[in-house]
Every structure is written in structure tokens, then in C-alpha cells.
Image (cartoon, rainbow, N blue to C red; front, side, top):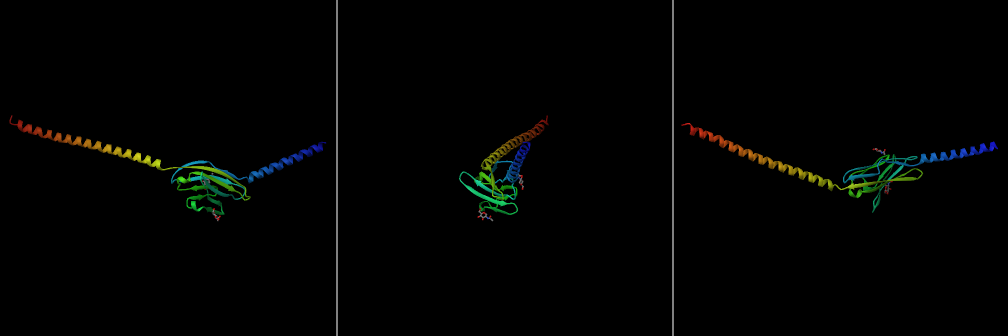
Length: 194
Ligand SMILES: *[C@@H]1O[C@H](CO)[C@@H](O)[C@H](O)[C@H]1NC(C)=O
Ligand SMILES: *[C@@H]1O[C@H](CO)[C@@H](O)[C@H](O)[C@H]1NC(C)=O
């Protein structure tokens, strides 16, 4: 009876160990996508960097897709050390990094939307993560710049007017002083006979 009991527990332990090993192996094979930030805001003409760190069993294949309410288009696919395939629409604007990160430069208003990264391992399993990008118009900054310029111009105009007014005052003072300087001489000549 104790023998049987021991054996039962042995089998149980083996089963648990087996499950645990399978679980750990699964974890080791699991695809992971790590990212510090999921929502980004940029202005037109600026650059954006979707920072991720992907890992899986073997070399991952990274694929980025743009998704908005109206379209879904492929941006590029790459496998570190093997190939980099950037779609014609994005050529020259996309920078592919081996950790899966993607840099997108010269942003346009139409670039606002969702960016999905799909990581596929060698067995074909995949995992994805999404990022939201907001693109602001530069118009607001232009207006701000204009208002600042207008304010600077107004200040300059005010300063010029103040200077002219002061110069005018000084000129009048000088003229008055010159007149007064001439008067005593006249007085003196007039007073001399006395
Ligand atoms: C991925 O690599 C780039 C440089 O190649 C680095 O700037 C970025 O921080 C990395 N991202 C993460 C999440 O580690
Ligand atoms: C690159 O992508 C395009 C379209 O997504 C595809 O037609 C082409 O075969 C790809 N090239 C390589 C080398 O994978």
C-alpha cells in the first residue's frame, strides 16, 4: 500500500514537472513585444519613432501596417540580418531597426491613425501591438508666430514714436535754449551804456 502511494505521487510529480517544462518552453518560444509608449503626438513635417523591442524564438519577422478609419496599408516588412522591404508609398521616409522599431519622417496630416506591428516567428505564430499617432497642423504654430511678430512690430513702432516724440522735445528745448542764450547778449549790449 505505501509503495503504491509513493508511486502515485511519483507519477503526479512527473506530470507536474512535464507540464511545467512545457509551460517554460512555451514561454521561451513566446513572442514578446515591449514598448515604452503607445500614444504619440507630433506636428506636420516632424519625425516620429515607434520604439519597440521584439523578441521570439529565432529571428523575428517584423511587419508594420498603417490603419485608419478609411484605409489599411502595408508600410514595410523586415527580418533583421535578412531583408528589409519598404512599400513604395513609404520609401525614403521609413527607418527600420533590428529591434522592430520604426522611424517615420516628414509627417503629413494623413499619417494620423494607428500603426500595428506584427511579429512572426519561424514557426509562423505571430503577435501584434498597436500604436496611435496624432498629427497636429502647423497652422496653430504659424498663427502663434504671426501674433508674436505682430506684437514685436507694434512694440517697435511704439518705441519709434516715443523716440521721435523725445527727439522733438529735445529739439524744441535746444531751440528755446539757443534763443534764451542769444537774449542775454542783447540785454547785455543794451545794458552796457548804463
Ligand atoms: C530599439 O533600438 C533603437 C536603436 O536602434 C533604440 O533607440 C530604441 O530605444 C530601442 N527600443 C527599445 C524599446 O528598446
Ligand atoms: C516587398 O513587398 C511587396 C509588396 O508588399 C511585394 O510585392 C514584394 O514581393 C516584396 N519583396 C520582397 C523582396 O519581399
